[in-house]
Length: 147
Image (cartoon, rainbow, N blue to C red; front, side, top):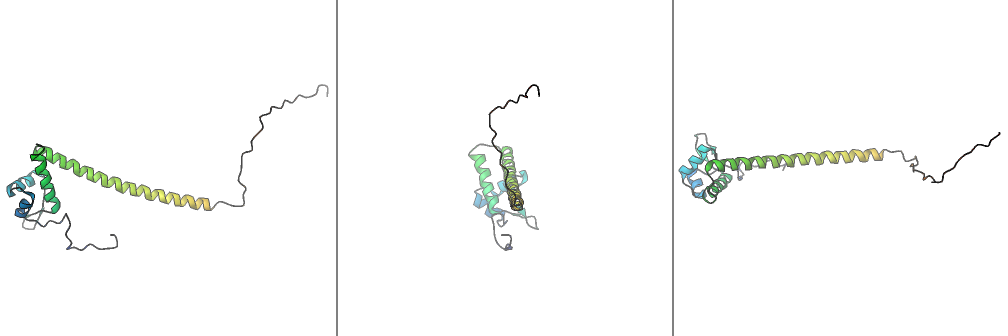
């Protein structure tokens, strides 16, 4: 995607397009609940110039997740906020690991390339040295007496 420019009108999961009433309907929650979640920092939608809330598809999914954790699992809102923070931290760390893995792989490829260049530069007119096996016989030298 490096060579292509992104269409500024292309909608993604991050595009803030839903007003609060539509977001409430899509998530199955009351608009006042969405306002409360925003005040608590659980789900923070983008804002328009007039300060109106605009929710993305990702925000809607997060609202559903918050509702499921609260209703199905019985987790309080403070606990849900911490879970969301930890999930975001894990995602950021996973992205960093992927970035560092790519950097390490790039460095390893460069090292292999340089190693191949060094091997290619060896002189070919030299004979490789091989270690000669020595006999295990013991020779004792005794000088002659009287000489």
